[in-house]
Length: 421
Image 1 (cartoon, helix red, strand yellow):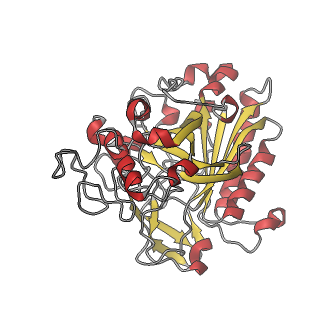
Image 2 (spheres, helix red, strand yellow):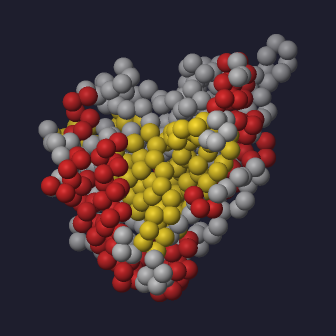
């Protein structure tokens, strides 16, 4: 059963008609890019761009189709808000109960993503769909809890290794099912996530919940400008782009060697990375730039050029010292030092207020989509964990890996090919 084509990733529709959208690669490090906050200087957040600044009056009108060859919310341009919730199945929940839950989510997501509000949606009445997407992925534990699915577990669904410096809280990672809800409006994202939670209440309970944000459309004069993270660095220069020849093979799982239910799908690695902002902000701008290997104002590599100029790792100053330090983040995470490894990052900042010690509990929700995490995220993060200068200023506190099934056809429900294959 093949899924019909969704509105192409380069285009989007609105209640006023069809507009054009182009992707801008936004990561690859340009700051805390790439894997840094998790892995690879190759992946980064996507920027939603048009021919000029997006008028505020149109932000809520954007729609992203729910049905398509792959799930929405993966290769689509990044929205301003994210709500992440991982669920654990209730004891003795089997295939039938999981099917009912996923059928319910499918019906609900179809309606919500097109802005089909009803009286039950009082918090968002009068709002537009705001580019709402609902993306579902499965954790490795699901295949242990539902015996009928054990032989459908992908070979790449193995636990991530423990990386040097990890300080992981198991209660805030992993989970049987992950739901990523993204939208250009925080209220729309939060409402959709809550409604999905209510639909799942008989079969599953929330294991953990995180929410994040990026710069909203219309608040910057250049809608194509790269986002900044909470460290003040441009974050998203070298992300793989949809017009790259190998983009699809990098991000989406192709046929061969994997169960058919994940063909057209992708693997997601989630890392919650707290930034030690108080310590970071004690550094001067020059010291911060040496840690990253890029200028803070323009995002240009310290070897010269502009934001998207490729770093010259051999360049030296008059004193003979490398302009980009051997342990600079941009060097450690760059594809050239990681056998060309790339991944598609759609990360979000988070700020949960002060911790008990008074330090800010804020940082990055690192979200990296890729066809093969064992040869993508893992080797890059292993290198970063051993020698990245940025390690002194971040803490990896939660982690998870999930397999997102392929897209949903008009007559299918989420995960149908897994549950009925």
